[in-house]
Length: 240
Image 1 (cartoon, rainbow, N blue to C red):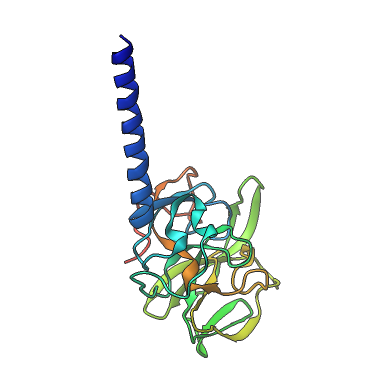
Image 2: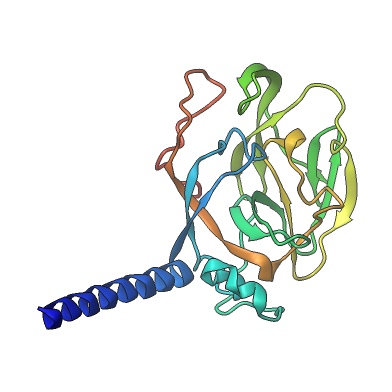
């Protein structure tokens, strides 16, 4: 009887260890998941959405390792199998100052000149095409209703996405001009007036090494939207 129990325990231990190692391998080289903690990417992403994130999209760095163990490793200027992201990609990355995991939209590549005037984004001296703003009343996360405007913005490469803003002047409505340095990227949230992103001195640009992966799709969307201010997010590809 003791031998049988021992064999079963050893068998279960081997199964658990194998499952754990498989999980570590998958979340290091293939896919991971990320939960949206804030409203900075509304309406593209809502608080509580869970995303599939591809680790291989831009190559690998110390931040590709699971359980944040990469924070114990020295920084590097390059990634293994490094590939440059594209403007418009929604990317999960490590905050360059405090180490938190963040998600924003990439708008500026190395060498780009970024400027924001009156809330309108300009890249390399060209104002981005944008539809006329439409007023809407939207539901905030646990905070009632708020008045905002909605418009569609087109990044270079014909990447279109929806932007939400508050009415009136806001602290980050004017920025730059600023040239993105080599080895860094410039990020902004789609909820422009409720996003502490690369326009904010407390974050700034993000080193390419700090990228974790590209957001691919929402596999769990807890909030259901019944009006035109929201759109279906579940299993919708986030990039072409």
